[in-house]
Amino acid sequence: MSASHPVVAVYPGSFDPITRGHEDIVRRALHVADRLIVAVAHTATQSKSGLFSVDERLDLLREVFAGEDNVEACAFEGLLVEFARTRGVRFVIRGLRAVSDFEYELQMTQMNRELWPDMETIFLAPEVDYSFLSSSLVREVARLGGDIGRFVSPVVAERVRAKLKGE
Ligand code: PNS
Image 1: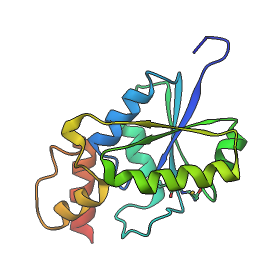
Image 2: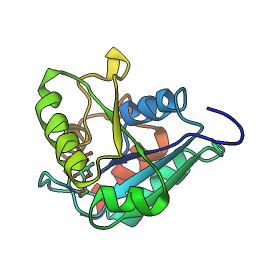
Image 3: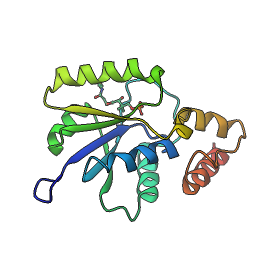
């Protein structure tokens, strides 16, 4: 890291919705990068039944990281490598919660490397308290009436409640 050559990294994902685990990874990523682009993918590699539109997820990211000037939220279409290349970013951050994440993450990393060898993926482990947490479980718990207050920021919990009321 240096003032003249700031390190910029992209943290891609579905973020449907952003959890406290994602927030933890963002804060850890800022220990190795000067600036972080949290990038919501229009196309996720694994199929999932979603809750929020990409624009709604972006709004939530912007609210959660309001006041953090070195965190930018944006969306991208198509390949992650193309997005990163056009933004001139060579570092990708991914969270690794458990061994069960590893196979999928390694496969994506190797494919991305085939597509653009200059891009490096950096894996960060979240706080152990978040090692079980995923957006899909948050959606399921919320849909079944459980309390998600410990797993997401208050603004996210509120928006999930409102969304489910309208579903
Ligand atoms: O949070 P997720 O859903 O595990 O994130 C997966 C994501 C969005 C990082 C991955 O699906 C992705 O990079 N999608 C963009 C399309 C792409 O580049 N696909 C090829 C990946 S090898």
